[in-house]
Image 1 (tube, rainbow over the protein chains, first blue to last red):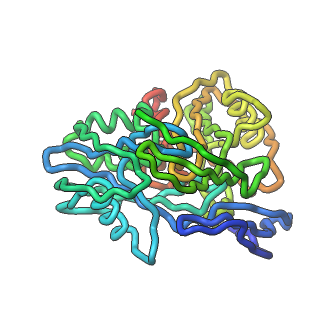
Image 2: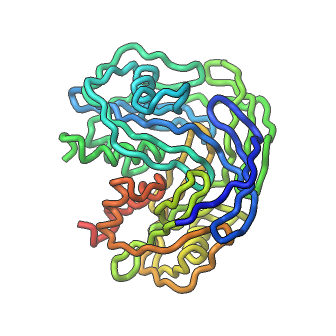
Length: 179
Length: 179
């Protein structure tokens, strides 16, 4: 299938987390227009499961939506670190978690009409919890729930972070205690 | 739980689809810093099912990720139109679809660390297809797949748009032909 052509590019805003980029584009059909998008390095969402079958969720204040939200550990790629390394770093930083094993589950785009962000999903099993290394801006606490309950929470919207809910549902067939 | 306080606000960029907003904020713990976020009016994702049990998917070029993506009809809220009205509009515009019934399934945030966007999920059943009214910038075609296959595609990542995949998995228990 034909792709669109980029005729020009400029940055409206740049940061260490993401940029706002404005491109002049030509569609496959030859139409020209300006497309403004979030240029994002990608991010990981990690489903952490302890050896006794509990999913470790984070109850965290999310300023953009003005609410405390339930989610799994997540964070943006940076410094050329590959997704699995980022997944291990976020586990350690956000929940003080050390996994016995970590596996790649899949990838999806979080907002493909606006942002280039790709979400990489990992399942971390045999997770041991220790002291966390939280970032200054994160108001959060941990909630441990049985795997089957976490899946129900992902289906009901109680886990309101969409990428976290999808990551959990993608991990469902890999979790022996669910059914 | 305490929320964060907004001390100041300015817009770095504004459009009819979304804005880039920069706020000065104070956390519950008293830390002050600058938070830059996408201010979004919200959007709908609609799972359209025909009377013979086919899900209507869109194969569409998404410039931000540089790929053709499989997804369900979706679109941003605008002009004060409520989510259900927007869902009906997107069905008509993107697939030329008229539903016999439409029901609200739930809501989630698409990217709660960066964006205020809330996704409203609808299930449209008994959908009849007619001529579409596509927007100029949308290179797309339609794919009809049986409900059970669409669910598998949402689980496997073949439907690469995360919100579409989650919308389908949320609709799964409401679709009698799945199992």
